[in-house]
Image 1 (tube, rainbow, N blue to C red):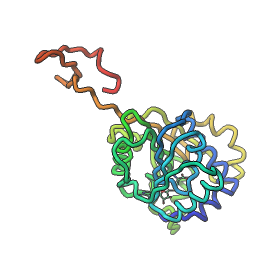
Image 2: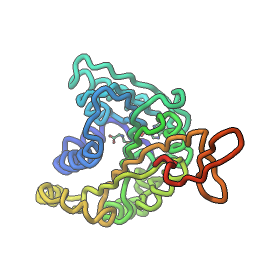
Image 3: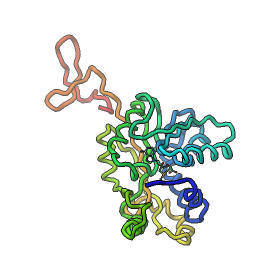
Image 4: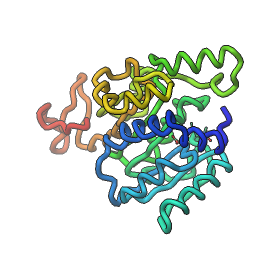
Length: 262
Ligand SMILES: C[S@@+](CC[C@H](N)C(=O)[O-])C[C@H]1O[C@@H](n2cnc3c(N)ncnc32)[C@H](O)[C@@H]1O
């Protein structure tokens, strides 16, 4: 799906867009309250709204996107809203991010996986550039929502914009993260109202309360996962149980001492 900056900016300026954007950002950033000093990558950063918010919260941010026009719009937004913040903008694909292993404390990817052909490869690469113990924050389009129904109907009627978009369940996302050695820590749903400005206005106050419903009814799913730490060398698996190796040859079967990440 080709997203250009103009309709995106237009969407954010609309009442429905601004309320929705606000609730989505809140669902994402509420899961990582302290960003001060963190090295952050925003993969599929688009016109830079999440990059700029992360930067405002004190993170050192890199924005990566495969679209030059989106990066140009993001730079303009940066200059008008941040002044002298040091954001690094990179042109590239999330399937092969041009960064070394373990370069970031936090990776954000908002409505990126719904557009890519190989989400598994993308999540694997995002996990690669994340340091062990670092956090991945995903924001995705929920499948069980009125928005998904409307967008799928539009695609069915011929609208190009939503033809290739994938709508996710929390279970699918969890499986994807697990395969990439990432442990899900929290999930928040947002945007439980249908895509109408009046509903957004009315729902603004109680949408947060509905997050107890999880993915059901939510147009936006925000998920936080942490990259597993490597198991220290002194541990090994014996008969299906983690054991601590001690001495030259001997082992001590000692389940209690297994680190939490094992
Ligand atoms: C729906 S927009 C979301 C932008 C931003 N994350 C936000 O939520 O405001 C998706 C963005 O991902 C970018 N994109 C799509 N496929 C990509 C890929 N394979 N690698 C990097 N960026 C990609 C698009 O150019 C677009 O800017």
